[in-house]
Image (cartoon, rainbow, N blue to C red; front, side):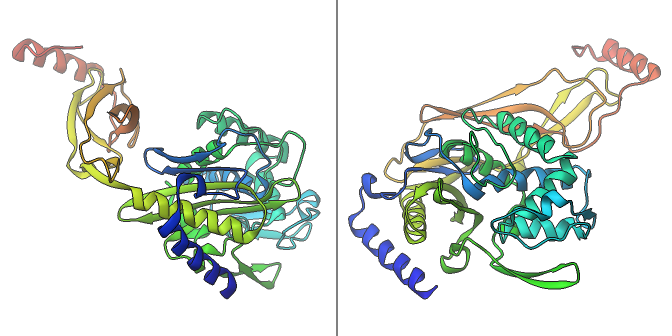
Length: 380
């Protein structure tokens, strides 16, 4: 461990003095560096080249699990019955026994910290009913996120014909994953203990940078014979979060050094400038079939410019697009987009409501019409 840490520090020093763009990720077969909230591309190397992702596959498994938790479809305390299929998985595992019952929370830690293949299959079967159905869900979610070159064949990442993705597509999945605090809480944990069928197991994170490089707090390593050494990582500094992906590295040390190099390059060259605070953005729209027609809406996140520190003058445009929504609506429903355009790119932010909007009754509708006749306000 000390050797790795020392190597990273020395490499970082060399980077600060000598690095050019060609030297940022010299050992990677494919690489990308983006800002998390906007997807701003900072660096790329063969980012659309299809490759085996190994256990970086598990960032999608984690995403679907956490989304199921947030949707209330599953709970952390749920007990999952381990199938023969899950218990027989090879590679990295937490040695689940067929027929045993394990908490969702335990399986989640097994996936996110120890990269356990058996935990991944057990979770896939619990959410999807079958492993195959969960894989279908993985591919559907990937398409929703804009992944155009990704095909998942399993939830764990062991090499399988056609199980391919790209550095760019993985960055899209990772951007969605880091928006969930639970994902960062798990993947930033360096070590933990879990109970597996009454036995205490020590988990150690396969991503050593979460301990040996300050600021890196996720996400997922990978290694197979075909994928070689891979890492999807994330780091926050000065209110800006970056996501990096390196694929087909020839060693763990080079995987780590290329990742750190990319992160330091990104933070040295770019910064975040807040232009709209979500807590100060409150507007009103009219929804005519609502009980209360005047509905307030809000931004769901701050709007930031990701700017090159060498370019102080940045021109940008802000516009809104509100959807033609009708009541009833639920709290946190998206009713439109705020669009930010600058640097030849366009970024979108959700406009949401923070309270349920009830549909107007017949009497409410008559009252609204009467109000219109008195005030002369326009009914859409």
